[in-house]
Structures are given as structure tokens and as C-alpha cells.
Image (tube, rainbow, N blue to C red; front, side, top):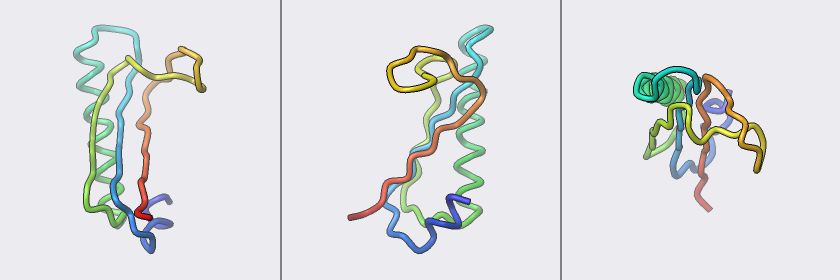
Length: 86
């Protein structure tokens, strides 16, 4: 839906950060979060999001928070930030 809505907007960059479950070994969680972020970025590109640059990163189970300032892990998601040109 985000890709569809942003088609007519001047998108500068899309940042996709993959996160994973915090249980288990860190390395497999990091790899899983990277795969999750890449899958989301690919889906946005295939849906026609007009971004000249996609930044894809992974954090595994580290760094996820439930709400601002609350260090409560969120599981199995990718966060997407779309930066528009001014």
C-alpha cells in the first residue's frame, strides 16, 4: 500500500531495517532479519515505489523497541522509512 501511495511523490530514499526474535543465537537472528529486510525492500520495488536508493540493514534481535523509550523487544518485523524530497 505504501508503494502505491508514494508512486506520485518525489521519493529520495527508502530505508528498510529488519528485526528478528531476540530468543536464540544472535547470528542466525541477524541473518533472518537481513532476509526479512531484503524481502520487504524487494516487494516495495516490485510494487513500483519510485526510490532511487534503498538502504537495507539488519539488527537481529537488538535495537527493537515497542514505543519511544521503552526497551521492550518487538519480534519478526521490518521497519520502513520513506524519505521524500522537499
